[in-house]
Length: 589
Image (cartoon, rainbow, N blue to C red; front, side):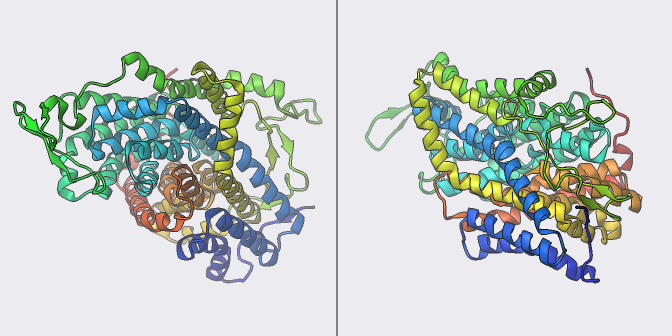
């Protein structure tokens, strides 16, 4: 069976676009307007997408069903498994008491909530994004902030806002690799272009993050620290993406920004220690030589003031041991991402990884199972592609080389090194699985929705609506990436969905395709904070399931505003600084 997508079944593009948008309207309408739990929202959105695809776009039932199943399977292995394993490692850290030491090490650096959110949500979150991605930073950093004393709502919302600028290079550069594969454009050029867009937002987001918490005056009190965090991260992001590779951009950015701000705070302190109302009022630091007395009459020196610079109760060795699970996570994920190791493991363990073509040659590219009925059965047509092109559907069941498996092994090794028995690890894993079950359902159905949209052509209909914006396409094309992430929860997925469309449309409009394909990924990161998948993970990790609608309404305007800023940056590159768009770059070996 073969079926060709149609992009205007009603003969009026605006009506076809409105119908194609129904799954998104149902998804976000239920979440924001009716406070329905995210897994039910995802299920309703997926069922709506299947119905629209079959009834209005005339997609055969078996193709719709298989595309949905393909998306669910992809979501479970490629995304949910990463998040589950990362939270499992976090739970091991909590169970062994190491997480308390980690929290105290951060609190020992500064008790100021503004600086803590920069350290944990932005810097540490960027590091976890680079290592694992796919929602893991929101889960781990959110739980970390609750342990520091942040209310669950603040922990969830602030981490969703922070998890933006690093997302384009999440999980060892997976979104960039995917973008290069689907657009057939040089990865080095795409990587460098993304690295010339997002560093500007990397400076803006830390400022935005603190301003979300406090007033303008209280934000400017810590402006030096904000600039150290943002500029150090942005410069590393730019340098690594333009001159090294696409794999370690976030990991190096996170490490450099953490080291920079911790070093800076040894020489600089804000005039006041800011806290939430539930912590107590902000307190001014005493003069360097002053002695103060607390409410119980005990004398405090400035060095001991509210733990601001008091000595840690733990030795350096204990602190290093506490951070060991996350160092182990980084090591395993890096090893799992090395092409020689990944290829060797795939060849040894992945079913149907070697596929021999009729001419006796091995099939190039992903060589997993061909999804029954779906593989090469759906054809994309003009104007989405230059000529009718079949959509491949291959599922590589890379159970051992999957990033989530690397995270899982890191958790197991860390648990054993910390003295846990295999039975204790099994109990912790079961508790993690039970706690994350609804988030995993939401992730799976969200990917099912995204894949139905892809194979039915709903995504293309929505994308074509953006192409009608003409001169303003660089701005609205950036929001096409935003919409893709809001829909699928993944910058990788939005690059797969819209990368080809961005290339074709930009060429038709006379805009550099390197710029617009990179803009798809850069704009997508700002949609990360409003997708149902991330919000579900955030609420599950911070123990506030049921508040998803409140969080969505809080972060949505931040998402749109930051997306607009990114769109303006892309507009400037398109029409003012077009010579800055890279071509023919080569990574340093």
